[in-house]
Image (cartoon, rainbow, N blue to C red):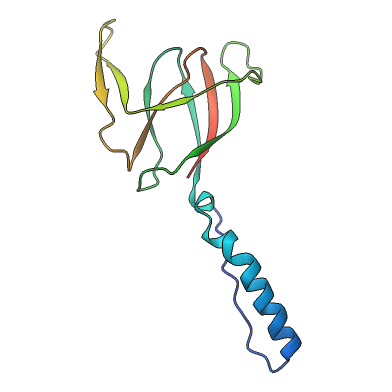
Length: 129
């Protein structure tokens, strides 16, 4: 992922240019300190009513996430209806071909987020930060 370069002032004897640089530095400070820029784009296929662990790779607990795109896996068409991919502290772990599942807690929130699409088999892309 390409990172934004911090604004670097140029040493100059021109007072007008110095004021312009000060204004730019002040205007850009909130942009560079925004937590949302330190995120990653994740794409994951969810199955109906099954909470799953999704590796986010941030190295810290996420502050939040934004859904970017959702595709219905059956039709291949974009999913435009209101869809809530929810975060949970728990997920289901299925064993082998068995229909039984155990409820497990997220082992490491600094590496994984537990998510559930709820009502649809979908492929979701989201920005996690």
